[in-house]
Structures are given as C-alpha cells and as structure tokens.
Image (cartoon, rainbow, N blue to C red; front, side, top):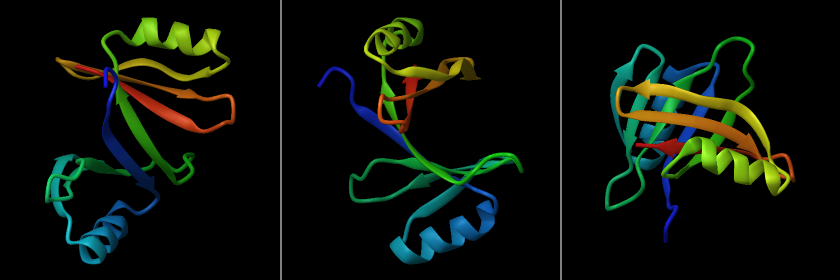
Length: 114
C-alpha cells in the first residue's frame, strides 16, 4: 500500500475525560506530548493515535491520517477529484506536516507528511 493510514486522532472539549475514558475502556497507554495533545499507544501492534483538547470553537471529531509524500501534490489531486481543502499544510515539528480535507461526502480526513 503506497499511502497507508498512519495515525488517528480523537478531539473533544475535555481531553482529560477522553483520556480516562479510552484508557479504562481499552487499556490504552497515554503519554503527554504537548499541553493540548496526548499520544496514545493501543498495544498489540495496533495503530497509535492521539487525543486532542479542542479549542472552544471546535466540535468533537475523529480523524484518520493518511501518509503522503507531498501534501501540496496530494491536495491538488484531492481537489481535482471533488474534495475540498479544510486546512492547508501546517507544520507539526521540524520533520512533519499535516493538512485536512473533506471528501465529496463531507467527511474530514487528514494527510501526514514526514
């Protein structure tokens, strides 16, 4: 597979409550990453993800992130196919960037470039 799903994220208005809920419900391990972000290890080879503390103007969400070689190229192709850019390429760290798009059905999906 050339563009695998490499990360997932759950965001909500009370990240502490989400961490407690998912930690107890599934035994996931949580590691604080930034003030508003927690990295999550699901164990047993499962895909890692994150829990995010949303800003007050953000609705709760669940997003998967697909790895791409080039965000701009991928977003251009997505737009040609009927998708819409929701968030343009944005740096996370020195070596990583992400973007968000909505598909023709309205679902928001993330792209991740290492």
